[in-house]
Image 1: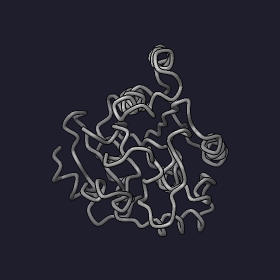
Image 2 (image 1 turned 90 degrees about the vertical axis):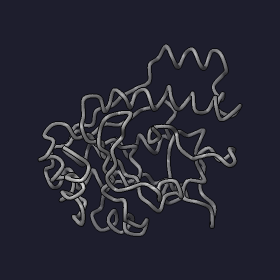
Image 3 (image 1 turned 135 degrees about the vertical axis):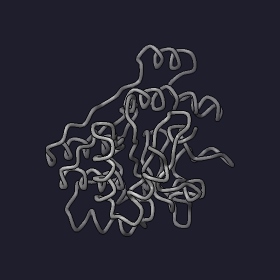
Image 4 (image 1 turned 90 degrees about the horizontal axis):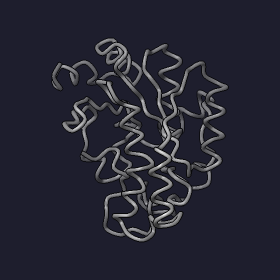
Amino acid sequence: MDLYKINCAVEGKSAENGLSALAVMFPGKVVFTTSFGIEDQVILHKIVTNGIDIKVATIDTGRLFSETYEVFWQTLNRFDKKIHVYFPNYKSVEKIVSASGPYSFFNSVEERKECCRIRKVLPLRRAIEGMRVWVSGIRAKQSNERGQMQQIEYDEQRRMFKYYPLFDWRFDDVRRYIDEKYVPYNVLHDSGFMSIGCQPCTRKVEPGEDFRAGRWWWEEGVSKECGCHED
């Protein structure tokens, strides 16, 4: 199966129809990873309400907001869908915290990315292992880097296709869907938090700032990514 055929299968289709098409093309081999952000809640709602056979997975870094766990719990109570949870290797976490303390990520970009690698990137590998398509809540308007991406991509390193069903959605579209469908969402979004990750590394976004300015805000002139979506 090549990228052109997959792109033809989802091009111009609604998010739910695109997800359904991929689930049929790759039975049992499509995974959606959620951080319980507002975009992810839209995608999960579409998967569940349309009965689409897609695996749902999440990464628990051990540093999440209490509000994130709350929406996780609300989601489990609302939807009849198993969510597979992946944790970082405890020996790796013990090693980095013992060596550099609980806030090593403030020391340098390299140490921050190492923390992300241990807590997010490596667990992600297990979450998507054996899958052919990885679904994510990336939108083009989230950052300049993400605006350069395509709705359907092929990840050479992981040897899998990536699909962003809400790629062309605006934030207002996402919020409207959540309100109309009464979908549980992270209440931090109401307080100016746009992109929500680990608690020590996330702050609210001030008026006029970039969508992802609240992530690793102490870093200047670097990509606001953890490594999960970088080859």
